[in-house]
Image 1 (cartoon, rainbow, N blue to C red):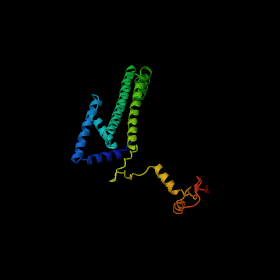
Image 2: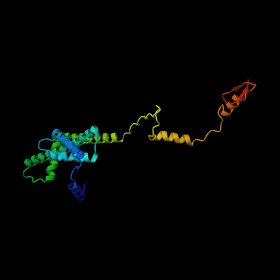
Image 3: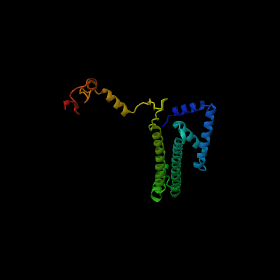
Image 4: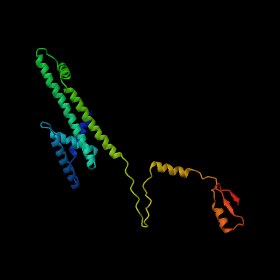
Length: 232
């Protein structure tokens, strides 16, 4: 839970803000206000505070900074799920308070404490209705929606970007891309440079070919696959 000092610091910082200054910033703020207003019209019920919902949505947008329609849609889903979960909390409170009043009316002379009335109300709602069961189910549902949207948002931001295709040079050939190599390619290159050269001569050396074509021999030469030479 945030301390009172942190809350006061947030209020002080908020009071210093003068909103967007540039024309582009003002247009973006106007578009966000329109989007938030349309969203609140579809989510906020009569009797609920629309300004509170708009503030909640704006704070989530300011914290996550979504880019593009997909990210904005995921952030909207998070804001709606958070709002509906808060609504479920209010419904649970209202249901318990109504039942507490009923328990008090049924026992007017018992002088029961609020804690006892709350316990009786909880027991009655649990035993005689599905109110609390449905409240818990929907609370879990909205909580999953919130975290699923957040997880998907982070997955989109952390996925690797595709490697751009090589740009052809003036000769018509594809220029070598200067994009950094992947870890596997880097390790492969390092292993290639690190491996020592073999001491075994190739099957047919360059010197042999030079001698063969510059000095004709009287005896035909057969080159075996193993690199050895034998007269025919």
